Length: 429
Ligand code: EPU
Image 1 (cartoon, rainbow, N blue to C red):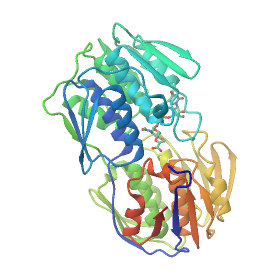
Image 2 (cartoon, rainbow, N blue to C red; image 1 turned 90 degrees about the horizontal axis):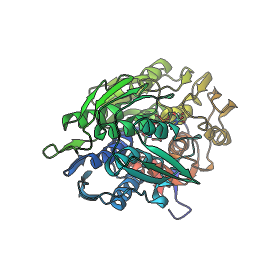
Image 3 (spheres, rainbow, N blue to C red; image 1 turned 90 degrees about the vertical axis):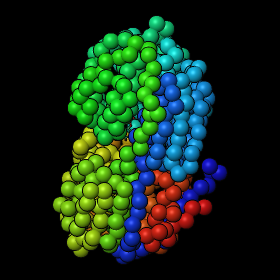
Image 4 (cartoon, helix red, strand yellow; image 1 turned 30 degrees about the horizontal axis):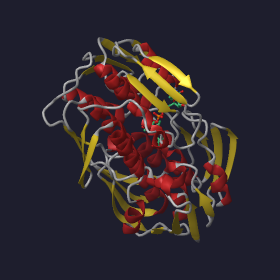
């Protein structure tokens, strides 16, 4: 990060010419908990299909600072050994810039009886409190002390099972509590837990390697704890699932500026809500067991009432990319962001590029289309808005500059190479 890292995109001026194939990488939001879960194992855990992106490098550095050994085997292979002595203090500089660090809380506390960490930072997309983590771990017997911006959680005699009702469905809170409960004593019940594919992938691997977990994918997950005994299956290893948000972002790109653009190495079952909406708008798709091809689309796309929702509803992480497509639909679309309260700010930038958008409050907006977009010099405020600006730059006329490329690189592996290969003129400077 040199302070002026950027993408430069030569826009297609509305032409739909991107064609070929884009392969989706492993999921960021599956890799992060998979890496945290390695703290639950006596022996080394191997992960494959790990994306090479900066959030994963941050998690690797955090694990190493805690005392784990992390070996990179090339081509997305990672081997983590964490059965020895593990520390309790999160590296402040890394954790405070990286929200995903919070996933380590459950495993570290369960492993060491203590966790000391700063309030986690990350993308600025809303308040992003951590109350569900703290109250959940208290229910498992931890004490919580807050000292300025540092938290101290203690459970010197180990965690014990308990019943937790999450007042909001939270992906990472469900994941970290599930991991903590695996090492707790007795039974834990997580109610109103998150049903996202990443939670299921984590839980299935824990089950396969000896944990007792029931109810994955439903709102009630039941875990029978091991009273501190680490998991020790023979050669535990697993492949990270495809990144459904990267996949969805590129399918939207295809609807904007593609023709016969194939997005492969994905799981279409993770994208049902997006694919249904695109079909409703007039985008012609071919769906196979592991790929989606954007064949073509109607000249006049239909507008939508878009509402984000927990899985299997429309993911909040695709809300900004989808808004770019809505600028090209004929008529008035509405957006209702139900998960986060700070995720509509990018619309001001799209307006500078020619979009006709109105933001009513932190959750609701509308877009009138179609409007041609034009070149602009813009700055990413977060990962998914940054990706939306790349999409907007692709459909716009002229040369768009997207500053803060490092935000996009938190979650999209080699994006400029992937997009160049299907015909977009994009470079990173
Ligand atoms: N919430 C609380 N208290 C908490 C935790 C969450 O009130 O202690 C609220 C949040 O403010 C929000 C709602 O619960 O309103 C849901 O947030 P959630 O906790 O599910 O989000 P997260 O676990 O922090 C994960 C992904 C996000 C994705 C959301 C929603 C990871 C590492 N991150 O975040 O991904 O947007 O779920 O699906 O899995 C991204 O990849 O760009 C990204 C932000």
